[in-house]
Amino acid sequence: MKVLFLCSGSNSCRSLMAEAILQDLDQSIEVFSAGLHPEPQIDLFAIKVMAEIGIDISKKNTKSYLEFEGLPVDYLITLCEGTKDKITSINIPARHKIHLGFEDPRKSDIPEEQRIHTYRNIRDEIRNELEYFYNFILMTELEVQK
Image 1 (cartoon, rainbow, N blue to C red):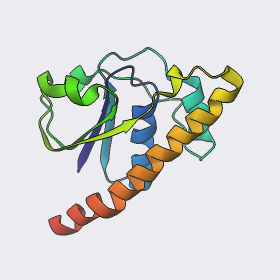
Image 2 (cartoon, rainbow, N blue to C red):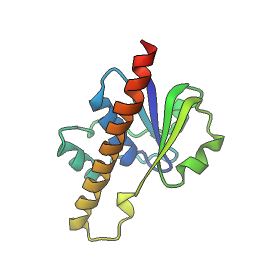
Image 3 (tube, rainbow, N blue to C red):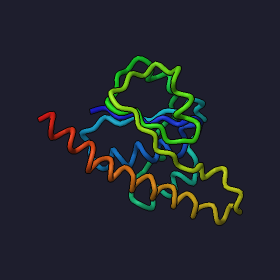
């Protein structure tokens, strides 16, 4: 089973969180993430809020979607606003395409000392959605494949 999380931006926050959360749920699933315009570094707030739930993403690398072009995946999951519309020209064959839209915590205009709460909320939303996805979609498909 291969799952690719794709974001319209940097692959430095939400898509990396999603990759790590799903991988934490099941190590047997091949999980990847990428962005249309990757940044060189992971978002420091993302590292911090993931560490709070016992998941270390500090050593992950951001990736471009180009690394995955032509690679067939079972699920291509877009996470960011605008991604769903931008992937029509991307050559990543997927059996299933799902869009889960999450707010960009970096675009928040709240003071930096309060921004951590926005990141926690987004992390928790991603975790809740992926726990549902894993338990009610992936597990069902994995059982059928046995």
